[in-house]
Length: 423
Image (cartoon, rainbow, N blue to C red; front, side, top):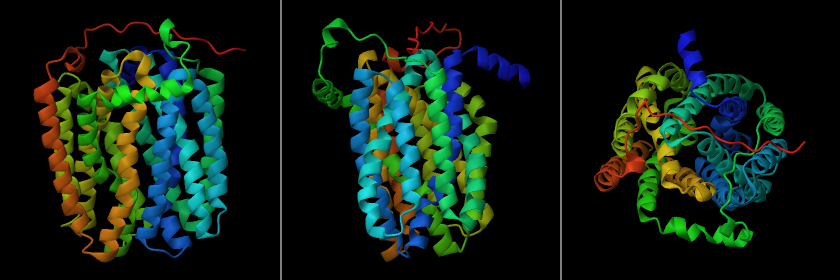
């Protein structure tokens, strides 16, 4: 095992591993808080999931806007400054969010926090794409999946314990960890932005933002986005609506919900490397279809099962789909993008997560609060099935293009030239 880890370490640039470490620490902070945020809102302010879903949707809606602005700023000014600024703002905003005692204050906070906290997301994705050549991106994103799920092993377990005593403690811990990660980025991670072509160096920020029209005209990429949105509307329920569903329908407490997420994380840590090495030799759009097919089964099960062990099995099935689909989708998005537009493409890819986060919780809340709660999972299974069919169609249309061909382990990874930060 040690030899395999050592070999894997040598396959990637050292700066990539610093990014991995930063992602791991930041992930612990996020997983401490995020899975319990719906419970925090419904319990502290004594409201239903519809209201909680509306607030979560506002975070995502304005996060979408912030992400789009951040993508353009990333292509214009670089990755590093956006990441540091986003982390510091996130630290400050978490403390503020934890001290709110009036529900009406959450609405304007959702606007401001959503807008500024998400600006750094495209910078992080673009930095990873900068550091890794095309033939290593799927595996590199797979590495990030593993450390992210190591965070899921630690975060929800601790979060469940802390949340049982004090929700405010979750916000404090997240604040401290975000500050630590900002210091790591400032001290150890250089700028990775590729050199801007001379003809584009004089472009204004507004002109750079206007470049999104070129992304929108990439109809193949937009079709890829549409399939992802359908699938992610369902996938996002795992991290917000499911906790409330389990509590209200099956009387499962937050600690046992946290245990389910930890099971998912353990599966990823144990098997993600092997799965990633298997999928990198296979057509990526078909791998997306396969991963989404696992979602059809796993999420559909929540509408039928009531035994806790069956719910754990559903989580494992969903996790298999995650291990196949998440690193593949990130690699595909990066491969769609020209180098000088990577920030904007990755921001648009982030849109595929933001739209489900915006509409998903509210729509799910309407179903849970007013209809048969199990209907949520039946609809989810259908949406995932439609998405899987769409990925098959993309394979038939784009699968033979060189940028989407399966990668081969014998391909060599070119070195990445980095720009050291100023002293």
